[in-house]
Amino acid sequence: MRREPAPTSQRPTRAEEVYAPAGAAAGRPVSARVHAAFSPDSTYAGTAPVPVHRLVYRVRLAVPHSLGIAPGTFPLPAAELYVDVADERLRARFVGDGWPVPAGSEVRLRRDQPGAYVFDGEGGRPLGPGQLASWFEGGRLRREPSYRVRAPSARDQPFRSDLLCRFIAEWSRQPPDVVMRRCGEDGAPPFFRVGLWRAERTADVSVELPRNALRADEVGPPPPAASAHTRAYISPQHLAGLAPLPHGIVHPPAHPLEPPAEGLAVENRGTSRAIMTVQGVPVGWVDAGETALFVGLVPGVYAVGAMRPLGLQTAQRRNVTVPGTISLPR
Figure 1 (tube, rainbow, N blue to C red):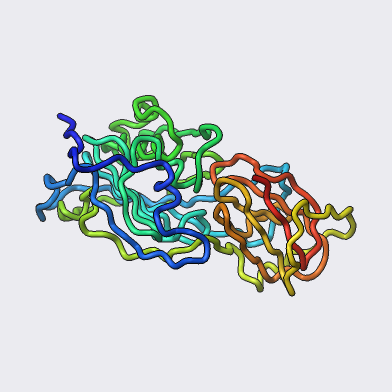
Figure 2 (figure 1 turned 90 degrees about the vertical axis):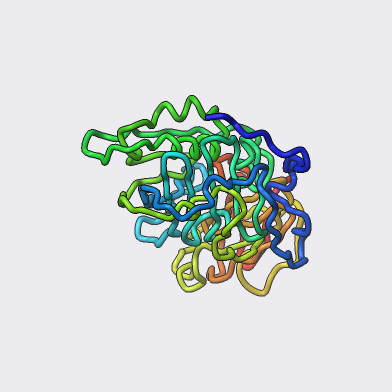
């Protein structure tokens, strides 16, 4: 299919705008803005029915053992990926509070255009090729994450699913042609992995949607996602069930902060979003340049670490006294 050129009036989205839109400075409320796509998706403006496969993936984050091993009975954050995929268009929604992006964020793809269009807590904006990975990371990637796609079996519903692998390629900043060869006419992959996020397919239903429900531009935005620069994955009630270490040497913070009255205060001095772990449990995330407070931990000493959303470790596991503080390095 012929690729439509981007209108000359539309400038490319700068890298900084991918993960730090204008107005998203610390401590200031953000007015959600919806920017025009690089090219309008007018060919999907009608209401004629389009055959679609609606997929659901249950997703979990595999925390590296270097950051600890979570207790087997401890409740981990829930995350799902809802995907509507047709021959020429795809929409993927991040559902649940277990993601490092606002719940309800939506990614739109079209076969005839590179890149993606994303809606999140800051509004909507187009992304160039590979920028979806930076959006998810909340900063510039230090290295490309690994990925894996398990080919569908003969028992799966056959349909053209390579756009799903194109989404995986954008998410992991991989060459689309290489990843898309892993999908084809045999249905949706039953499993895939991007970085340390492991997705297992739990539903695959054939439906029909009006053509304009698959537009891949800014028209018809989804319900607004809440704007947030930090989020706790675990409720204070559940965090209270995480036992402190029976003993251990406490490492003083390199940049001491005023200790909070309760909980763990985290100052992210780094250049990307960070997922915090306590005793191997992912407890929440904090954007670059922000400070978060995770409450519920009973007083004691805990093994605390941090990782980037796509898997690169940003802070080694260290013992921290709670109530207390930790400052992540630049």
